[in-house]
Image 1 (cartoon, helix red, strand yellow):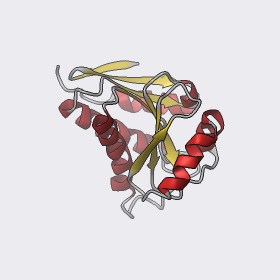
Image 2 (cartoon, rainbow, N blue to C red):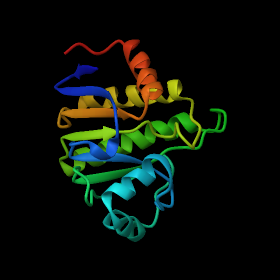
Image 3 (cartoon, one colour):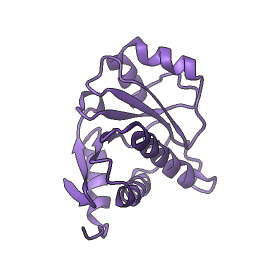
Length: 180
Protein backbone atom coordinates (compact mmCIF):
# COMPACT_ATOMS: atom_id res chain seq x y z
CA UNK A 1 0.00 0.00 0.00
CA UNK A 2 1.36 3.43 -1.02
CA UNK A 3 0.09 6.94 -0.33
CA UNK A 4 1.42 10.26 -1.64
CA UNK A 5 2.04 12.88 1.05
CA UNK A 6 3.14 16.18 -0.45
CA UNK A 7 6.11 15.16 -2.66
CA UNK A 8 6.85 12.08 -0.56
CA UNK A 9 5.65 8.48 -0.57
CA UNK A 10 4.35 6.70 2.52
CA UNK A 11 4.46 2.95 2.01
CA UNK A 12 3.34 -0.08 4.04
CA UNK A 13 4.87 -3.51 3.47
CA UNK A 14 5.08 -6.80 5.31
CA UNK A 15 8.65 -7.99 5.68
CA UNK A 16 12.00 -7.97 7.41
CA UNK A 17 13.39 -4.52 8.15
CA UNK A 18 16.98 -5.79 7.98
CA UNK A 19 16.55 -6.43 4.23
CA UNK A 20 15.37 -2.93 3.30
CA UNK A 21 17.20 -0.92 0.65
CA UNK A 22 16.34 2.45 2.19
CA UNK A 23 19.19 4.77 3.19
CA UNK A 24 18.26 4.31 6.85
CA UNK A 25 16.31 1.82 8.88
CA UNK A 26 14.92 2.55 12.31
CA UNK A 27 15.63 0.24 15.21
CA UNK A 28 13.12 -0.16 18.04
CA UNK A 29 15.89 0.25 20.59
CA UNK A 30 16.10 0.21 24.38
CA UNK A 31 17.36 3.25 26.27
CA UNK A 32 20.72 1.61 27.01
CA UNK A 33 21.28 0.87 23.29
CA UNK A 34 22.33 -2.61 24.42
CA UNK A 35 20.69 -4.67 21.71
CA UNK A 36 18.00 -7.13 22.68
CA UNK A 37 15.28 -9.24 21.13
CA UNK A 38 12.82 -8.64 18.32
CA UNK A 39 13.70 -5.92 15.81
CA UNK A 40 16.63 -4.72 17.92
CA UNK A 41 18.29 -8.13 18.04
CA UNK A 42 17.66 -8.79 14.35
CA UNK A 43 19.26 -5.49 13.33
CA UNK A 44 22.34 -6.06 15.49
CA UNK A 45 22.75 -9.64 14.23
CA UNK A 46 22.39 -8.64 10.57
CA UNK A 47 24.41 -5.43 10.84
CA UNK A 48 27.36 -6.83 12.73
CA UNK A 49 29.46 -5.58 15.64
CA UNK A 50 30.13 -2.10 14.20
CA UNK A 51 26.63 -1.01 15.17
CA UNK A 52 27.04 -2.13 18.79
CA UNK A 53 30.46 -0.49 19.00
CA UNK A 54 28.91 2.85 18.03
CA UNK A 55 26.00 2.31 20.41
CA UNK A 56 28.47 1.74 23.27
CA UNK A 57 30.28 4.99 22.42
CA UNK A 58 26.97 6.89 22.39
CA UNK A 59 26.06 5.30 25.72
CA UNK A 60 22.28 5.59 25.73
CA UNK A 61 19.20 7.42 24.55
CA UNK A 62 16.16 8.62 26.51
CA UNK A 63 12.67 7.32 25.80
CA UNK A 64 10.95 9.32 23.06
CA UNK A 65 14.23 10.18 21.32
CA UNK A 66 16.62 8.66 18.79
CA UNK A 67 20.30 8.50 17.82
CA UNK A 68 22.03 7.42 14.60
CA UNK A 69 24.82 4.94 13.85
CA UNK A 70 26.34 3.24 10.86
CA UNK A 71 24.39 0.48 9.16
CA UNK A 72 27.30 -1.93 9.44
CA UNK A 73 26.73 -4.85 7.05
CA UNK A 74 23.10 -3.90 6.34
CA UNK A 75 21.93 -2.64 2.94
CA UNK A 76 20.92 0.55 4.75
CA UNK A 77 23.76 3.02 5.27
CA UNK A 78 22.43 4.11 8.67
CA UNK A 79 20.48 2.77 11.64
CA UNK A 80 18.42 5.27 13.59
CA UNK A 81 17.88 3.86 17.09
CA UNK A 82 14.51 5.11 18.37
CA UNK A 83 13.50 4.44 21.95
CA UNK A 84 9.78 3.98 22.33
CA UNK A 85 7.92 3.71 25.62
CA UNK A 86 6.95 0.66 27.59
CA UNK A 87 3.14 0.68 27.66
CA UNK A 88 1.66 1.14 31.15
CA UNK A 89 -2.01 1.65 30.29
CA UNK A 90 -1.67 4.82 28.21
CA UNK A 91 -1.87 7.44 30.96
CA UNK A 92 1.83 7.90 31.65
CA UNK A 93 2.86 9.93 28.60
CA UNK A 94 3.28 6.90 26.36
CA UNK A 95 1.59 8.50 23.33
CA UNK A 96 3.85 11.57 23.50
CA UNK A 97 6.95 9.40 23.92
CA UNK A 98 5.96 7.17 21.01
CA UNK A 99 5.30 10.17 18.75
CA UNK A 100 8.62 11.63 19.93
CA UNK A 101 10.52 8.50 18.92
CA UNK A 102 9.14 8.74 15.37
CA UNK A 103 9.54 12.52 15.16
CA UNK A 104 13.13 12.54 16.41
CA UNK A 105 13.99 9.79 13.90
CA UNK A 106 12.56 11.85 11.06
CA UNK A 107 14.39 14.98 12.21
CA UNK A 108 17.69 13.07 12.28
CA UNK A 109 17.00 11.80 8.76
CA UNK A 110 16.35 15.34 7.52
CA UNK A 111 19.48 16.69 9.24
CA UNK A 112 21.62 13.95 7.66
CA UNK A 113 20.11 14.39 4.17
CA UNK A 114 18.61 10.90 4.25
CA UNK A 115 15.90 10.59 1.61
CA UNK A 116 14.45 7.16 2.47
CA UNK A 117 13.67 5.64 5.87
CA UNK A 118 12.13 2.32 6.92
CA UNK A 119 10.35 2.09 10.29
CA UNK A 120 9.23 -0.95 12.26
CA UNK A 121 6.23 -0.78 14.58
CA UNK A 122 7.98 0.77 17.59
CA UNK A 123 6.98 -0.40 21.10
CA UNK A 124 4.37 -2.95 19.96
CA UNK A 125 6.43 -6.06 20.70
CA UNK A 126 7.95 -6.65 24.14
CA UNK A 127 7.01 -3.10 25.22
CA UNK A 128 3.31 -4.01 24.90
CA UNK A 129 1.88 -0.97 23.11
CA UNK A 130 -1.50 -1.87 21.54
CA UNK A 131 -0.78 -2.06 17.83
CA UNK A 132 -3.84 -0.18 16.52
CA UNK A 133 -3.18 2.77 18.82
CA UNK A 134 0.55 2.69 18.05
CA UNK A 135 -0.16 2.57 14.31
CA UNK A 136 -2.43 5.62 14.54
CA UNK A 137 0.25 7.62 16.41
CA UNK A 138 3.04 6.48 14.08
CA UNK A 139 1.16 7.21 10.86
CA UNK A 140 -0.13 10.59 12.03
CA UNK A 141 3.34 11.66 13.17
CA UNK A 142 4.90 10.66 9.85
CA UNK A 143 2.18 12.34 7.75
CA UNK A 144 2.41 15.58 9.74
CA UNK A 145 6.17 15.61 9.28
CA UNK A 146 6.12 14.81 5.56
CA UNK A 147 3.62 17.61 4.90
CA UNK A 148 6.35 20.09 5.90
CA UNK A 149 9.48 18.11 4.94
CA UNK A 150 9.50 16.94 1.32
CA UNK A 151 13.26 16.29 1.54
CA UNK A 152 12.39 12.81 2.80
CA UNK A 153 11.13 11.13 -0.36
CA UNK A 154 10.09 7.77 1.09
CA UNK A 155 8.95 6.54 4.47
CA UNK A 156 8.24 2.83 4.53
CA UNK A 157 6.61 1.01 7.43
CA UNK A 158 7.99 -2.52 7.41
CA UNK A 159 5.67 -4.70 9.45
CA UNK A 160 6.74 -8.10 10.69
CA UNK A 161 3.93 -10.58 10.21
CA UNK A 162 0.48 -10.47 8.68
CA UNK A 163 -1.25 -9.27 11.86
CA UNK A 164 0.99 -6.20 12.19
CA UNK A 165 0.71 -5.42 8.48
CA UNK A 166 -3.09 -5.74 8.53
CA UNK A 167 -3.34 -3.52 11.62
CA UNK A 168 -1.33 -0.73 9.97
CA UNK A 169 -3.17 -1.14 6.68
CA UNK A 170 -6.53 -0.89 8.46
CA UNK A 171 -5.51 2.24 10.39
CA UNK A 172 -3.97 3.78 7.25
CA UNK A 173 -7.18 3.13 5.32
CA UNK A 174 -9.19 5.23 7.78
CA UNK A 175 -7.02 8.35 7.48
CA UNK A 176 -8.00 11.40 5.46
CA UNK A 177 -4.78 12.16 3.60
CA UNK A 178 -3.84 15.72 2.68
CA UNK A 179 -4.47 16.75 -0.90
CA UNK A 180 -1.31 17.12 -2.96
